[in-house]
Image (cartoon, rainbow, N blue to C red; front, side, top):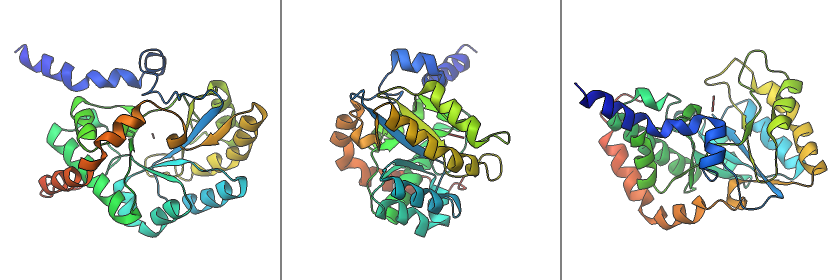
Length: 263
């Protein structure tokens, strides 16, 4: 009887990093704290979205900013042209899973299949080999961490977010939420989709983004993707990258008999 609680504890151990102060203090690279205090990484979760993402891409282009997009595999398959447009615009492509589901509620086999399927979808559609992975809701499991490592994906969360997924979000609330946590070397989390959030909540993100970018400029921060952020995890991820395509294919094949399934 003692075995089940022990296994559950092992399964859920990485979830402690979902607690912001804990990960910033104990796991700075996982929190998205980069090596350059003058740089801020801008990241978006849950896309691609057929309405939100194109508008966001146009806005980022006007401001001359590149970002990292954590894509949901199912959304990539449903909107391949939007996913390709992100890569074509020069933004960094990353993985957010195939389905936006809490990993603690998934078996290790389902988790590995989800990660493999998501990575394969992203590579097939965008032609980009992802380096970064962010678990849904920022909550990882032991199986997910192992699977990400096998796929050459480095996990990264965030240091501040806009709380832009709620029904009550407004451009002002999103801006002030980011402002409260913004610091040099940090990683901003926003969402360009409402796939797992309040309908059209991304409108508030779009309304807040120009002010967020202006705030970064006023503080002397350069804004860019995680690949320019100086994270220690990046080198390790690239060292594992040659195995990624083969492992992703194998994981997808292993999960092909299963049903496809805010941050």
